[in-house]
Structures are given as C-alpha cells and as structure tokens.
Amino acid sequence: MSERSAYIKAAESLRGNSGQWAAYESDGHCVVLAGPGSGKTKTLTIKLARMLAEDIEEPRGLACITYNNECARELEQRLNDLGIAPGKRIFIGTVHSFSLTQIILPYSKVARLGLPEDFAVANLQEQRDALERAYDRVIGRDEDPHRMWKGLMERYRRSHLNRAAAAFHDDDATCAQLVLAYEEELRAQGLIDFDDMPLLALRALRENKWLRCAIRAKYPVLAVDEYQDLGSALHSMVLGLCFSTGIRLFAVGDVDQSIYGFIGAKPELLRRLAQRADVETVPLRLNYRCGSSIVTASQFALGEERGYEAPAGAAEGTIYFQPLHGSYEQRAYYIFETLIPNAIARLPGLESGDIAILYPAAWLGDYIADAAQAYGYGTVRADSKSHYPRSSRLMRWLEQCATWCCSGWQTGTPRFSRLVADGERLFAETLASETEQNEFQRQLITFLWERRDSTLDLHTWLTTFRQELLNDHLARSRTMSDERNTLNTFVEKSAPGNTCDGFTLGLFCGHGEGNNRITLTTLHSSKGREFRFVVLFGMDDGKLPRNNAGEGEIREARRLFYVGFTRAEEEIHIIYSANNPSPFVTELAGRIDAGDV
Ligand SMILES: Nc1ncnc2c1ncn2[C@@H]1O[C@H](COP(=O)(O)OP(=O)(O)OP(=O)(O)O)[C@@H](O)[C@H]1O
Image (cartoon, rainbow, N blue to C red; front, side, top):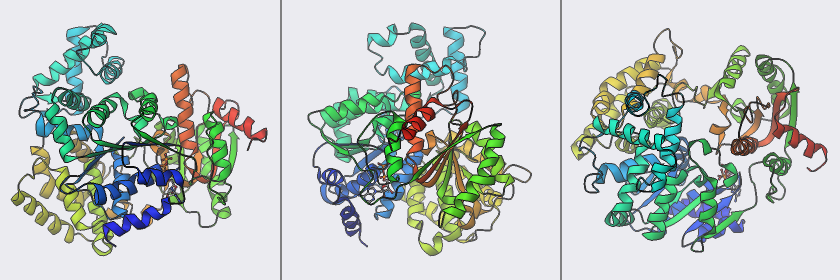
C-alpha cells in the first residue's frame, strides 16, 4: 500500500468520531485535549501522515516532540504502520534531542551561544564532579551535595528559564549562585548537560530571529505529544516558534495525566494553550480502550467528573478490589498462585503478554519479579530496574538489529533500510559524508547477515558488534558518552556468571516465545500503554500518596492512580493492604459500593 492510501484508509476510522475528524480536518493551530484511551495518539499519527502528504512540500518536513524516548519509539512505530519511516523530512524525539540536534549542534556558533567548537555532552560522572566543585565554591559545607542540592538545583534551572529576569537571582539567591557555578564548571571542561539543552536552545531562539525563521523553513509544522508533561522550556519554544514565527502547531495532551510535576511539568501550560483564541481546541469524549464500568469508575479514581464514556456496544469491564494481609512478598505470591491462573482460566485467549502489573515505586517490582520467577512466569520489566534504561536510543537500535537477525530478514519488520536510516541518525555526527554512510551500511549488512539466528549467544553478538561497528563511532561522538556507558554495562551483565548470562538474541529483542511475557512497570512508565488485564500492586497509604506528601504531591499522586487505572481494557485488580489502603482506593470503593457505577 502506498503511503498516501495507508493514511487515507486509516483516517476512515476517525470519521465516526466528530472530534477526531475535526482534528484531522483542522488547518490552523490545533490542540486535542482529551482523556485516556480517546485516540489522541492515533489521531496525531494519522494527522502527521496527512500533513506530510498534503500540506508540506518536500524537502520541508515536520518535527514531532514527545516526552521521552519510549513515547518517541511508540510514535515511530505507529507512523511506520502508516508507511512513514522517520528520515530527513521528519524529526521525532524529545525536547532535549530536538534542542541538541536541530538547534545547538548546527547553530551554536552562529547563534553565539559561547560554547567551544568541540563541546561535548557531560556523562553522569562529569556532572557529579561539576556539582561537587560548584558546591564547594558556593556553599562549602561538609555535606553530600547530591542528596538535597542536586534536586533543588535541577528544579530551579527548569523553572527559572530567563537568567536576565530579576526572579532568577531573587527567588533563591544561593540556588541561583549554585546554578551559575555549576554551569561554569561544566563549561570550563567544554561540556553541557541534559538540562542545558532546552535552555541553550531557547536562548538561541529568543536572541536570533533568523534562527526561528530557519527552523520554520525546515519544519513548517511542529507537533507535540503528551504536552502536559513537557515543562516550561518547551512551552516557551512553542510560543516563540508557533505564535510569533508562524510554525503551525498540532498538539495533544491531557491535563489529568500530568504526572511529572517533580521534574518541572506544569499542567496549566496546556490549559492556557488550549484557551488561546488563535488555537482550535478539540475535546474528545469517548474512551475506546477501557470497558464501560472502568471508564465510569476512572473518573472516581481521578476525583473529577469529565463526562467520558465508552462507545456504544463496548464491553463492560470489571474492577476487583483485593484487600490483603501479610508482607509484600506474600501479596506478590498471591498474584501468581491465584489471581493470574484464575484469570487465564476465565478470560478466553488471555496470554502473559496481555497482562501488566503496575506499582508506585520500582522497588516494589522486585517482589513481583521474584514471585513470577518462583511460579515460572516470564516477565519483562519496563521500569528503572530493567536490564538497561528503556530510554537508551542506542539500545533501542540494537534491539531492532537483533530483531532483524531473528526474523526481520524474512518478514521485513524491521526493514534493513530502516535500520540503516536509524543508525545514520544515531551516529549522525560521525557519519557525515556519503562515503562513511556507504561503508557503515556495508559493515552493518555484513555483520547482521552472518548472524541470522535467534538462538545466538547475546554476549558474543554484542561484543563483536561493539568491536566491529560501534566502538569507533562511540569514541568519536561528542554526545554519546552515557550511551556508551549503558552499552558497556549491559555487555558486562550479559557476560558469563552475571545477571543476563545465557541470554539469546531472541530473548534480548523479545522475539518468539520470549515476547509473550508479563509486563512489570511503575505507574509512571505505564503511561500511553494498554493491556487487557491490569493489576495495581501496593496501593497503600504511604505509598500512594507517599508519607508526608504536600498538597500538590497528593494531587499528582491521584493523577498517577488515574493513569494506572486507565491502562486496563477488560479487568483491573487493585491490591492493597487490608489495614492501610490508599485513600484513593477507599474513595473509589465507596463510590462503587454506593452504586455510582
Ligand atoms: N475512532 C476510533 N475507533 C476505534 N478505535 C479507536 C478510535 N480511536 C482510538 N481507538 C483505539 O483506542 C485505543 C486508545 O487510543 P490511543 O492510544 O491513541 O489513545 P490516547 O488518547 O493516546 O490514550 P492515553 O492518553 O491513555 O495514552 C487504541 O487501541 C486505539 O486504536
């Protein structure tokens, strides 16, 4: 199917929903403001495909910014299903990678950002060292600066974007000095860090009108997914690029799913955007994901009536409350001894891959992982305790390469051309010339073609890959120091005697048997995902919300509960301490008992 017919066909499924169709037909700035499962991401991807085909003439393209690399991966996959591979015309990535690759790397010198020509991105150790030196200079107490000051400084940098404003120096003079000293320490080493990226990009855009015009020339459309979690820097960029420079905006989000306040997200920014007179705001009411009782109850979970409904004829869905006694270990065992075997017997066709167990903090996942292993269930962890950070672009590309070796060479998923394009974007810095790109492509096909076997030993595959293809690029790149460390750590883990000893290529990329595993992840990392059967684990007072939470934190914890709750299609099981339930669970159970569902 051609690109054009693929999106036109997909758009037919939007026609029956007047809101989705209005967004699809919009021709100016448009914001889709809607709840879970309402098809925001679906509408966004089909609209992107349409704009690329109908509104934007080659070689111009569009930039799509999203919250994290996992969300970027999801969008890439959905666009790929519509026949659109990321490439020169389309940028999909985080605010940080947009700032770095589209603004700082190409324009830092002409935009006079004051960075040395060969600046690099600091790895975690270099950031720690810079903070320690800055702390000694500004505060100099005999304390660990990483415990309290690191978090304070990060929040201050993210919330005080304009260094010229008096508020930057006045709101917290010590913090302001620490920020400046920390940045000086980094610059003295020729480094920038992660938080510098949007700040420097914003400064470059603010101070240089020609740069805003250059971005508009390349990307006449800017799309934003998960707007509620993107923070002040992105919001300021959007205001400057879209409303002062004329780039067209297409954004989707949900203020009720804003769960990253602790790193600077502000749901009111999306609200303000949606209230602008020059923006067409499209609300969506139907939730296609969850059974009808789950949709109704989700609004009790949130504590707000939003008027969301399931479409006519949707299945009902069931909510189970599971108050338990005993330790977390005992409660985790109950899931695999009773809950899941019963569910598999009851729900036709339910497989491990349809099941997710979500918890408020990654350490609670350890109990689940141990219990799953004891009962012989395969699991995949998508939280911070996964075998490698799910956000790593390099690891994500290696997974794709492994998938090609296991099956892609026969099925075309992924296509080899996609691996080449993604690899060239990943190593864009060191693959500048056509000769280098051709050589990279030749080496890649030689390596992968000789290893088309899902039973190969992962450690050998990775060490050879690293040595033959990656080492040189990683050593020469200025931006991939952390990616290099991530790879080296994972290679070490896969070595004989370590935690991933014996992993095959198939297990690494979730191919075949290994793919059908129960997902274990935090409520935070469950955002954007959906499963037939969801277990919420550890829904206890003190865990959700955590002890001594302030008012704002309690509101955010409640939204987190709502995000987890709305991942379920058919069944949701809420496991909590019988003596100490989360107040959100108590309120939800009370509303359901009162017959509100
Ligand atoms: N018009 C539609 N007809 C049928 N199914 C739809 C329609 N719109 C969306 N869906 C389905 O609803 C589910 C949720 O869609 P999607 O993931 O795009 O929602 P979302 O609004 O991004 O959700 P969340 O905010 O919870 O991540 C998907 O399975 C999608 O295919």
